[in-house]
Image (cartoon, rainbow, N blue to C red):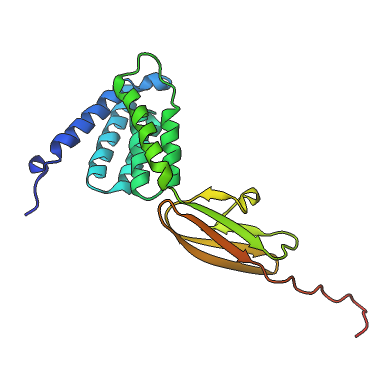
Amino acid sequence: MQKTLSSSPRRPRLLAACALLAASLVAAPALADAVDFETKSAARKLGTEGQKLFDAGDYAAALEKFNLADSLVPAPTLGLRAARCLAKLGRVVEASERYLDVTRMQLDRFAPPVMRKAQADALAEREKLLPAIPSLTVTLEGPTGAGVAVLVDDKPMPAALIGQKRPADPGAHRVEAKRADTSIFREVVLQPSEAGQVLLKLPPLPPPPAKPGAAD
């Protein structure tokens, strides 16, 4: 038989988290321009819903709630919870940047301790996460012709990063090189902390077209 929320052993932890979140949102306008009471109330409600979803393991839905609440009333507590959702979803590169954003938020001297604790937690959790983030190095061999575009998971990779380590999420990735006349790809699966490498070998360039009027 499914237990009700009142009988769940996680209820005290959930109530404590929601209380901390509510307390932080009371003073959150110190981080932004004046926010009306209706907006603060809506952000608090979204944050509470997000925490319940997080505790239930629905990290994608929780992330949506925390992001929306943070867009209404920016607060380190909301950013921290959003970063934790990203980490749970395996989006560790984005999570590390979100943690960093939290640590860089400007707090005035009247900010409540819960906000400063959120920043300290974000710093500690980011430092723990960084060593587990894989890297991916993509190198090219062969003629590039008029130019080659490299895509990772269908997203263009800056040319300056070819041959350089770039952070990547763990899991499967598709790496593709596109030249005017051809396209090649490889797939790689990265494990946490792994330094993955992908070599894309481009074939020879096609012969130039014959000039009009050239002798057979």
